[in-house]
Length: 185
Image (cartoon, rainbow, N blue to C red; front, side, top):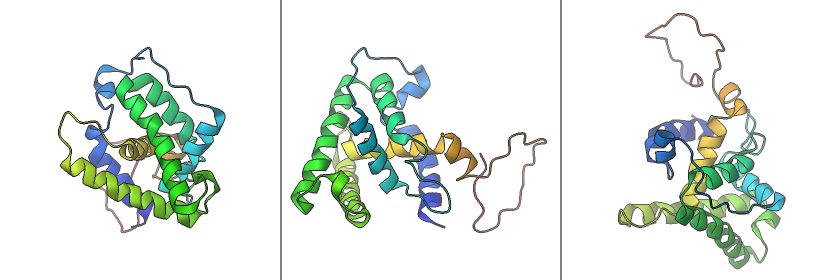
C-alpha cells in the first residue's frame, strides 16, 4: 500500500470528524466573513497540498487544484474563528520554514517541505490528543483535512486515484479484492 492509498483509507475514517464537518449536515452557508486569498496564497496552498499528496503514478493534489478548493471551503463553510486559525496557520508555516531553513516554504526543496510537514503533523497529533473540546483545531489538521477532502472529491481523485466506474450496473455485494487494487469511486 502506498502513501496515497493509506491516506485515502484514513480520510474515509476521518470523514465525520472534519473541522467544519457540520457544513456537510447543514450545507455550506457563508458566514458573511470572507478571508482574502491572493493568487500567491492559492499557489502556496497548492504546494502544501502537493507535499501531503504528491504526484505518484497518479496526479497529485496540485493537479486537482486543491489550493483553490481550500479557499472556497474556508470562506464558505468555516466559522470565523476557524478561518482566522487557518489564515494565521499559513503565516506560522512560513515562519517555521524561515526558522528552520532561512527561507519561506515556497523556496525550500521537496525533501525539506516533507520534513517540515511531518514535524507539523506530529505537533498537531499531540495537540489534538490533549486538546479540550472547546479548544480550536490545529491549523495543520485543517490543511490536511481539506487536502484530503479536496483531492478525493475532485475529478482527478475520483477517476485517477480510485477505480472509477461511471455506470456500475448491478449491485455486487462481494467483489474479490486483490492486494494493490484501488478503491472504487
